[in-house]
Length: 205
Image 1 (tube, rainbow, N blue to C red):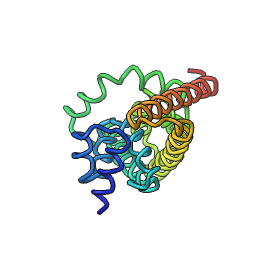
Image 2 (image 1 turned 30 degrees about the horizontal axis):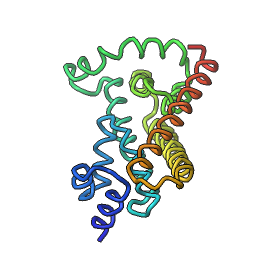
Image 3 (image 1 turned 90 degrees about the horizontal axis):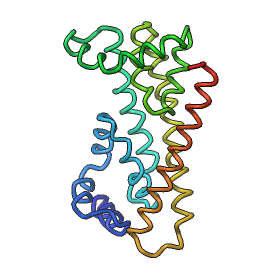
Image 4 (image 1 turned 90 degrees about the vertical axis):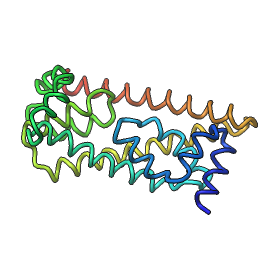
């Protein structure tokens, strides 16, 4: 019944049938896997579907937290030198500049920078690698990362909810979906930019 409800709600929301058919079978697993490979954009339609009850917003947020712990732990291991050398070389080389820039401003504030990085595009992986390289204790590292993503998930849900309410007068489902997703992306982009400016002012980089 849950799958049928999700399928009907997604179709009613104007999401293309082909995407819905794949997503409806195992929605939370697909969200989890998408987040692992950096597909955070899936959160917009996922939270939108939660407004109709087809998905659980709290479950989506906990999936976000779980994916973040796995992702954080992987990049922490890369920075700590716990993985085979060829794997580390492949993942670190393209990010070495960001790691070096970030290392200049951290100076004992690794966990604070890790928290901020969850709200600023392009800094998350560098912060995770740096925490591993600086041998930050793993439990607080995971706790801070999970807490930041918990807050971020609540922000995502709130922004989608506000955007959906502002588009209630629209009758065409596809137009409404497009408006909500665009407004959500714009709002989240603005929030990420503000977080970047605050972080830059605080850390001087």
